[in-house]
Amino acid sequence: MNTNLIVGLGTALDHWHHAQCLANMQPITLADLVPEGARAVIIAPHPDDEVLGTAGLLQQLHAAGHSLLLISITDGTASHPGSTDWPAEQLGELRALESREALRRLGLQWPHVSWLRAGFQDSQVADREHAVATFIEQHLLPGDVVFATWREDGHSDHDAVGRASSRAAKAAGVTLYEVPIWTWHWAHDHDPRVPWNRARKLCLSPHAVARKRYAAHAFTSQLQQDPSTGLGPILPPMVLERLLQPFEVLFVQEEG
Ligand SMILES: [Zn+2]
Image (cartoon, rainbow, N blue to C red):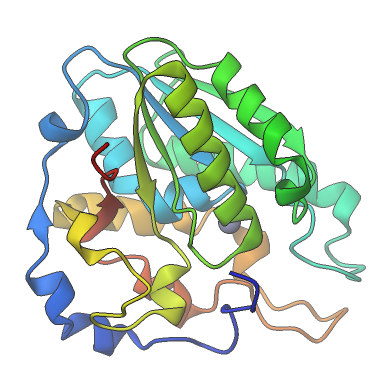
């Protein structure tokens, strides 16, 4: 998508609470998603997407004893352009520390979780899409199950990671699920731009949602105002609340 869909506060949480597309969505279980013994590979465009999109899934995977590989494609250094409070050169390390703390809050412990930081430039993933696909493919093993951002999520990095992950998963012959994150911002109930027929709902326990909320609050840099630029937080309370529903949505791949 070329137009910037991530403007304003977006679709209200209350809209989604009453959305028929969510009420009627087919549920899916962890056992449906990831076969016993298989490794799950989570591909996050920025540090925080792994929590915002799949913190509930991560908890279920860990509890079921699956090994996990998290790939952070960028270090998220472009979240605060022009900021003297959050300069890009500090954000890389800071956001990695935030991710590490968030994973700890989810109860994910090494060595069951491996983590790769791919080091691609934030906001420029589309320019390096082939290299990103190659990088991902190099780290996939037979039988892996890959979870990446949806290729039409409406953020250029998320879209590029979705496309690159799709190419890598196809080349490696492994299953891919795509996760909408910013979609909840710009879409609406029965929005024709969203493949609702391929959407599945992974239900989360209240405990898992509480833990996801706790983990999301590790991303301090994304939750605070920036006095040096006068801009509000990247994830204001309303945006965060929208991502803390008692389920996570995944798109299964089209047949053929
Ligand atoms: Zn992101």
